[in-house]
Length: 459
Ligand SMILES: *[C@@H]1O[C@H](CO)[C@@H](O)[C@H](O)[C@H]1NC(C)=O
Ligand SMILES: *[C@@H]1O[C@H](CO)[C@@H](O)[C@H](O)[C@H]1NC(C)=O
Image (cartoon, rainbow, N blue to C red; front, side, top):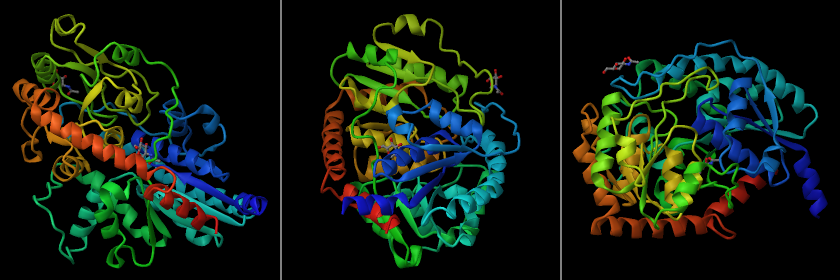
């Protein structure tokens, strides 16, 4: 029996088509490892630079698992890789657009690649980032191929956007008004992102990195016929490896080892946010004044090509490092976020609320100080603070144009790390985490959906 199943699986190949931005490259690589652990052959396709980036920054994945993934470098034209603008009033990393536009040229090589391997396989399953829909449109011409969209976004945010786009055809109950999408991105980026709508019709189903335990209501919304027709929807997350693999012992983990339990607030705004010198100064002073332990990852946003030259090293206020010695640590390089959040000394997370960061924090039971910057982040922030109630806002999205002052930072950090309110929020975060983790274990709802997705694609 087992050998028959293995044989069936051997005739199915999965082709992963990630979107070339860190939070997306990493997710699809994790999903690749997960699917490959079911004995299915997985191909990961993209430009040489972005494949290299995905492999270079593996987070918590075992190199032995990565070695089983078949990477294919496909050609794209050279693209400019300008630095981010830390002074821009819109925080969206619009400087990445040239690399994304260049990646649209993957369509031809991917089509050829699909035709080539489809002849030797019973079935080809293409799993692509929603933004890559234009690039995989030729799936429709390969008779034994099916495509699935992997969404690197929360179903709360996605359902609210789809619901607005299709004219709010049914009521959704919310205690608070949804944050506006104003200022979340630029017009050029909107145009680029809209290219996908012409090509999503061919997909066979949708996969989300979320758990029904936290987002069941919104997964159901996205599964409504008005939205997906007869397509299937699976919520298979959170897909963190069950045991985080330590790729290297980062100095910040050693530092965390020396701090008290849950005493440290971790501050990071991901790979797509650059802050101005002024914002950095206020944040630094606010942290100092809060007198709480902190671990601050201070980096500029990625460039389109992360291997392309120097990045800005933002200045900290004079004497800051000396004055906060022993209390805080500033990290300037790549930091192992899942391991930091899983560390017993970490007790809070000041975050831009990218979905990866949110779900990592949710899974680890770390309460959030939400400071959304762009894209889906304002709504993710609403979801974590208002709906899950596992965090507080640093500032309202309506005040996005205003400088966040040191006094606001100090206040938020104290509330989260050293107040009765903070203790309540942490308790809630720990409860949610326990439920979410259980959903990924044998018999849990996320694990069941993952198994069901695997049986579906290998049917
Ligand atoms: C899913 O979410 C986890 C957080 O639990 C994140 O670390 C990971 O990158 C995501 N994985 C996939 C495959 O989306
Ligand atoms: C941003 O503004 C600061 C002054 O506020 C200036 O020194 C810096 O050069 C500017 N950076 C860019 C990339 O425009």
